[in-house]
Amino acid sequence: MKIREPLSRRLHQFERVLVSSPEPFFFSGCVYMDINTLSRVDAAYIAGLVDGEGTITLVRKHRNENRQLALSISNTEYALLEFTRQAVGRGKITRKRTSKSHHTASYTCAIYNRQALELIRQLLPYLRSCKANRAELILQQYLPLTPRNGKYSSQLKQQRWEFEQKGLAIRACQD
Image (tube, rainbow, N blue to C red):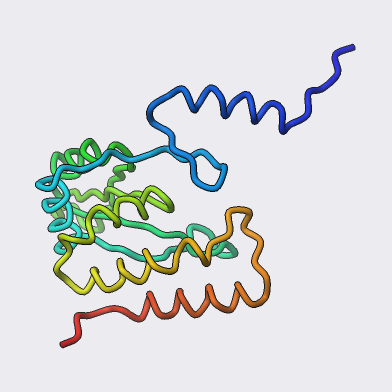
């Protein structure tokens, strides 16, 4: 009869395999898939895409879940989004549904959570729209208000809710 190995030992061995790969990075003991370091030109170009056609927001994928950080760019040119995905090294491109047959097909490239946070960190110096305000707020407050285990104390839950409301309230540039 084979005795089951404790889960922590299996995860520790899995972690060792991932550390040898150049792609993942560690944050607070957890492994995340890293994004590419962008050149200044690529970072400025992608920031322009985000300013013009993109979104930096907190979304719910399911009704009862907490909001997640999302950075997305929508466009009708697939090649433009594929360039972005290749430059960043992560993300997913999806086709958006067209409501009428004469509408042009459009696509969205999206990246979420910690990978989006790292991308925002690289894009922030080049953002020129009001999205820079939301990006700054997210960089300052997202990690401290997002526990890795998903367990929120009542105080942290209240602070997280206030952060979400403040971030979502940034809608248009203000003079």
